[in-house]
Amino acid sequence: MAGYIIRRALSCRNLFRLPTCALHVCENSPVKLCISDASSRVFTLPTVPNFISESRRSFAKGRKSKDEGGVSTVEVPPNVGPTIKASAASQMESAMAALSVELSKLRTGRASAGMLDHIIVETGGVKMPLNRIALVSVLDQKTLSVNPYDPETLKQLENAIVSSPLGLNPKTDGERLIAVIPPLTKEHVQAMNKLVTKSCEDTRQSIRRARQKAMDAIKKLNSSLPKDDIKRLEKEVDDLTKKSIKTAEDICKAKEKEISQG
Image 1 (tube, helix red, strand yellow):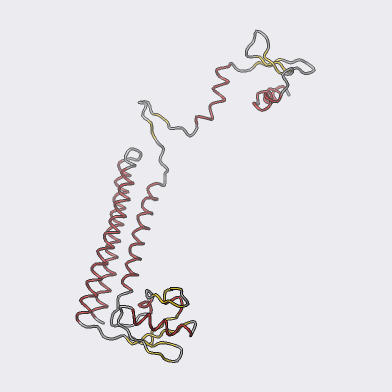
Image 2 (spheres, one colour):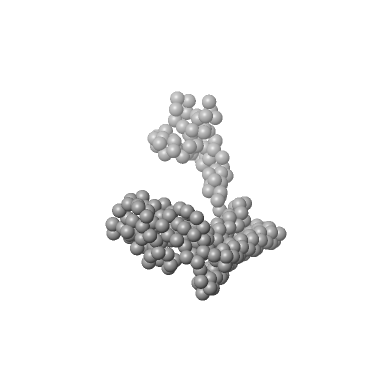
């Protein structure tokens, strides 16, 4: 029971709540606490310096630690390396996804359902991608079918396709459009291949920028991680960069082959 009373008495909240007449420091003893109850008990407190030290111990948590030389060190989260690598991988994947979108806009000699996705159609004063208001399907290697969800938009779809740089001239077939893919000329093939080469180089630059950002982030960890971990992380980012660039180049080569065979 006495231990419980001491713990309750040492609570800061209880010290402030007790009446002045019931709580005071005993005379000639700065480390004794008198509680006026039926037995007028007296309890001895720890010495003042230790009491203050104990009360402040919790405040030391979260501060920067110092080694024997007095140099401040910052604790690095254990997953910072994988986070940097994952961020670089995400940026590289985004660059390759953008490449695929750009290449899908280039017309080849073969019909593809995605070749009309980038066309913007204005209907009712609102501009929307063609694939939002119509279903595009492949009838054969040279023919596309465009079926609008709303037959009232058929004319707007036709105008948008004709105005696109694809060089298509769709014809109305009931409530749908039929677009025949014309063969590519030699000049057209050369122009398309130049666009593929440019898109490929742009993607390489985007991937290299993602690598550089990752390397800059790794350099900031030089004073916090062992050298072996730094080198391993740098090698992983370099391997990821080479793999991403090769994937982008393979996508472009496949597109060039498709255009040439068109």
